[in-house]
Length: 113
Image (spheres, rainbow, N blue to C red):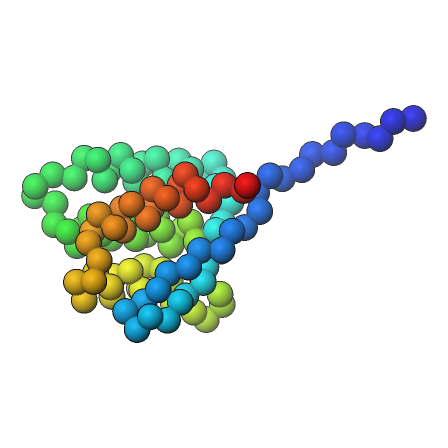
């Protein structure tokens, strides 16, 4: 008798690091890109592409940061990625596009190797 073929989940969490303005490194883990998360990611990226001149940086940033928080989780009791990234943005240490690029990186590079 042969061994049965067993279904395996492909997802394995990956570590994500963000350095804050005090050079402390915060660690996060990716979450599975399930159907609902993937759908929301697609909608978020479509919103990002459709931002107009009337869209404030703050409004655009909120949309992107909410999605980042859904894609990576901090250790229990630690700061969310959105808090760290917003603080860096307000301190003018990063640009809005840095945050959008980070979301793109999470979407494309977070898959297991």
